[in-house]
Length: 94
Image (cartoon, rainbow, N blue to C red):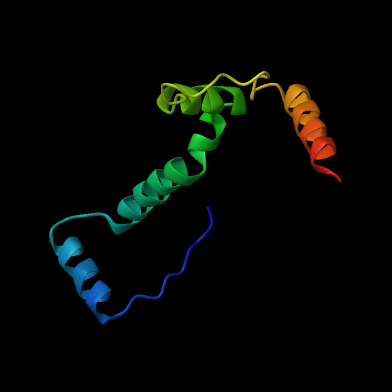
């Protein structure tokens, strides 16, 4: 088992002393805090949503306003978007 050495300021030292007097095992407290922080920051990475799921939720949350004419291509189809942008750029050139 690896030893972790942490420097505490005066206020934190006082808190640790009070916790010890109350019967709290500081090592257990630190281990639990590390596990929780790891789960919050790194553990959730394995449950990430795919780009397709994220984009579907964005389109569902923010649909086109009423009255806006439909596009002739699907924004979710990158090939169609590429063709539409290229065609628009060609039309704008003098």
